[in-house]
View 1 (cartoon, rainbow, N blue to C red):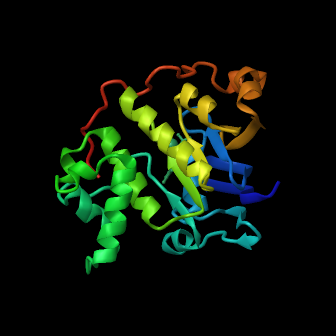
View 2 (view 1 turned 45 degrees about the horizontal axis):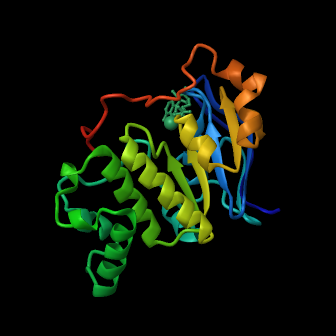
Length: 251
Ligand SMILES: Nc1ncnc2c1ncn2[C@@H]1O[C@H](COP(=O)(O)OP(=O)(O)O)[C@@H](O)[C@H]1O
Ligand SMILES: [Mg+2]
């Protein structure tokens, strides 16, 4: 077992807030890893540190043997780590296909073909000419996933892919993750929907106040005392944590 992605002792503070403290997380090659924890426990900050959107105060990030600590986002992406954002970052006033091509503005035929293939894969090719702003929340998440897939990253980080998404699209997203994983892609997924996490992940790491409090197979994590303590006072979200949040969000 080799860790394809590893953070080692990462610390990140915002003013007096310790967003991450000695945070060590390992993602095995070929696995689907989960990252859970209460709101504000540092999950998105860890994604930001891994992908260069936030600078670690201390600690290291490795892709395989390669140190990638505090490497710039476009470079991290080029090295093979793709990510989506908790609040999707699509351009509402561009079409779905145009969103796919923002990184290749000359619109070469090959780029368009690859873009359409990925839109087919996630099931929204029929909407390629629609303005992205008209997509539902779940379809926007699928668009972001398609965009990330064009670069063929080895590791894909998904920040709350099922949050606010209706059930049928949640199942679509889970199916696509399984297929991609079967074809060799490694995942690290932040998600509040426990059914989604427990159904997909080989291993789950639990953060509380920026520190890892538990890590292991989903069945064990689910009943771990430290995990239940971390979630005390919060809903261990079996249900949709964002009811009513469907399609209104600006990029
Ligand atoms: N850019 C930032 N500026 C200031 N504080 C931040 C910033 N990003 C995150 N934080 C703080 O760091 C903590 C962890 O946040 P976050 O990583 O978003 O948690 P999670 O994704 O687990 O909900 C929170 O207390 C949050 O308010
Ligand atoms: Mg978050």
